[in-house]
Amino acid sequence: MNQPETARRPVLALEDASKSFGAVRALQGVSLELFAGEAHALAGENGAGKSTLIKMLAGVHRPDSGRVMIDGEPVVFHGPSDARDAGIAVIYQEPTLFPDLTVAENIFMGRQPRRSLGRVDHRAVHTATAGLIARLGVDLDPDQPCRGLSIADQQIVEIAKALSFDARVLIMDEPTAALTGAEVARLFGVVRTLREQGAAVLFISHRLEEIFGLCQRVTTLRDGRWIAGEPLEGLTEDDLVRRMVGRDLGELYPKQPADIGGTALSVRRLTREGVFTDVSFEVRSGEIVALAGLVGAGRSEVVQAVFGVDRPDAGEVHVGGRKLPPGSPTAAMDAGIALVPEDRRQQGLVMEMSIERNIGLTGLDKLGRGGLVRKALERGRATDWAVRLQLKYNRLSDPVGVLSGGNQQKVVLAKWLATEPGVLIVDEPTRGIDVGTKAEVHRLLSSLAAEGLAVLMVSSDLPEVLGMADRVLVMHEGRIAAELDRADATEETIMAAATGRAGTERAA
Image (cartoon, rainbow, N blue to C red; front, side):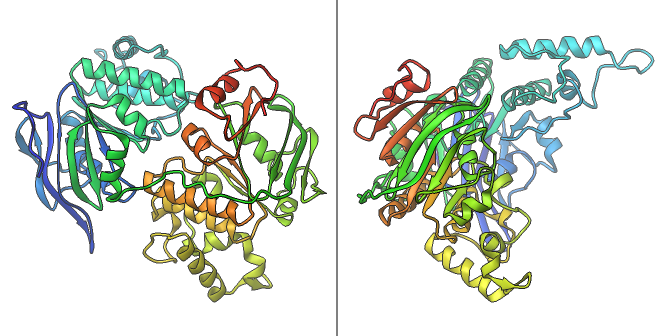
């Protein structure tokens, strides 16, 4: 068990805690200490036990052994309300607010100040909310309905709600996954303000640069076990990755040499009014082309139009020299295009369906006859791809929703690779997955390109773009602002084009 480095007393601690669910040991002898005025990262791959640990601190689960300590005294939480009353608040990736109520009403729901006759004191609610928001240093109207608020603003509301309960410990579970760069910067400013006011923060993120930019200490879990608890100062990203995966990861971007062939996908002057304009590019067999740019530049909208999800107002898409009819995903699939969408849960999978059924959805016509699916064929297809992509699962008949984020992404890839495409479009292929699985996805994409597949990759991760792409197309405000060869692409040249500082001419 890790020992505290100083004589300071932690606000919240977990001591030698274990938790099992049936035969699955989710946590084994894990310890953690959170101190006032400090941001503490919790690192580990998907399945390392992070969610179980969070739920233990939040009162959802009770440890089978070990104990939870507050200010040096053991406590037993009988439910989330006990943890909340003890000053522990959890901010999840997707806030849960009442959309038709105001910011102030959401913060004080069920405990509004009352006047003498029992009526809600709306002025007091407004004043208290304004004080909480001012304490966070943000600009938000207490009387604004929550419907229409950005995810970033909704998270601010959740943080304000936590402060209204006098929370001393703030647990933030992947809070930046759906935020833009500017929103992340604002959220980090709020977290630093809370630290300065004495709060203890537990921060969970797959983005290593965020951990190093915000936190002072890190605890690493692997396979449900405690690996290390240490200061981040003097630690490198490679050090942290090695602790998380238990091995030297080698290259996170294992780019294989590939023979670049002829044009597989040609997009000519594609336009959708108000979204993107005059977009033209080609992707050749064996080539990985990255579509980079800031959020809102039109990247996802372009690939959706190429696949036929959205109908463009002008322009043409050619696959293998054949023009595709606009607005027809069926025609795109028949021509050999596959699209792995950005949001795997909402657009890529049917979460209640089994793993094997999700993998088979793109080939139902080959798995049965007369509208009836042959179970053996479906199971065989799923088993084959589960082995090829090293999928981690219990039973193929389990709902795909029980898998980790990285394994869900593998199921989406399997579903589309089973169609044997000639062109693979992947939109944010490694968003929200751990570093080990990220390397596996990169290795897969690189090997597919080496086998002759044409890959068009949308990514907001600049290291991923630089590590994987043979060419980079940079979009700015709905147009392609630059085209960069691998040798010429740097973070500086990409960001210059993405922000409009590189002009509109392409640099080849």
